[in-house]
Amino acid sequence: MLWSCSSSAKRNAGNELFGKQIFQGGPVSDPSSNFVQDEMNVKDTWRVFRMMAEMVEGFDELSRIGPAVSIFGTARCKPSDPVYLKAETIARKLSERGFAVITGGGPGVMEAGNKGALAAGGTSVGLNIILPRETGPNPYQTKSLDFRYFFLRKLMFVKYAVAFVILPGGFGSLDELFETATLIQTKKIKKFPLFLVDSKFWNPMLDWLKTEVVERGYLEPSELDLFTVIDDPDELVDQIVWCENEKCYLRPDGIRGRRNAEDDI
Image (tube, rainbow, N blue to C red):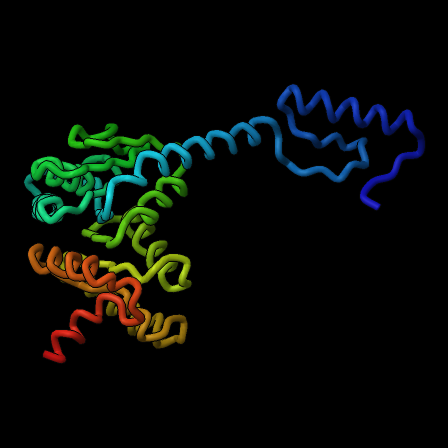
């Protein structure tokens, strides 16, 4: 039995307190009551509706953009930085080949991705979120969405992309990289290709994964095949085009199928 009271009067008093706290938005945690209660209050309830609104808006706005590529990378680089310039080039070339480009909508690599897509006349999507170090949405977006919740923003990155391009970055970029890899590893999404741009930056991380994580048995060696390290923007875009044409993410070998097909020629 979840609760008991010695009299109906005590039950009524408890119910009255419960009702007052619900409508006043306070926590339902009266120590004199024997109710088993959770910690959700009115503010939490309305927060669920805000989450639903962000989700519905995201689905509605992005469901018609066609095949898209999500680009991740640091917010802390200037337009003169080689990382910025490479992101801009990749986004422009992707747009020229018919792909929408999705970024986090902020500065740095995100701005570069939107800028390159816009320059090519493509669909340039910014999934904006206000953060302490960022100044707000960059001005190169043809479709701009605002998010309060990180997890919903990341859902939109993943749901509408057929490939992921990850340039050098910090915690946020690594979070996006490894969450996407985990979704692929656990078969929650299809085997979409993950491209790590800048071998000098990414190879030390992959070496660590091999020598420490794989060696300890925490990953299978084959699971590192989810990552493709690449430096050349043209080769990167060619691989994404091939993957989308061949629907490589439906194949057991994923993007590796392109290499296998070339070896058979």
